[in-house]
Length: 207
Image (cartoon, rainbow, N blue to C red; front, top):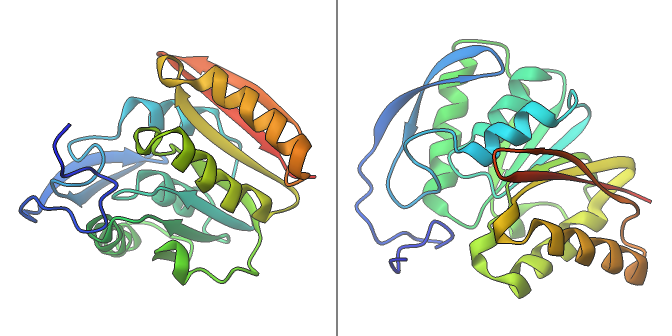
């Protein structure tokens, strides 16, 4: 991999914007992408599998590792009465999502959507729903730290839905989530709810 990872705060590649056609929540959109963010040319396969597997969102929704926004925008389109927070370390991705939310809102009703760095999110806020295609390539320890930070912020009765490629450790992550939830009491049951195209979707329930 180049040094310009999609999980860099400030990607080194030129910020050359382009538009791509996508369909999210049955809505045809033209959205902005750029180099230096995750899957800039299309909605990646893992995200597609996740979005086909999740139930209707509600309440307060978190997209963890939002990129240019396909998950957050889908939640905001499917549930205009919800409130969506999208978090990423990549400043370029956050800017793209803010611009894409404006584009989407011009086409269809859209829930209020906030794109922010983790340190900009009120630590007291709890989420009814977390949807995430987590950044597996940041490394196992960093990924575990990320999930340790956010999964305990599920509201009572809430659930997180994570999509992970099987050959990049979906089953080992499911085992870690189960053990870690028992150790910390930060979350409850972990279930594999879908498997398609080489990906697994894991559901993590709040205690």
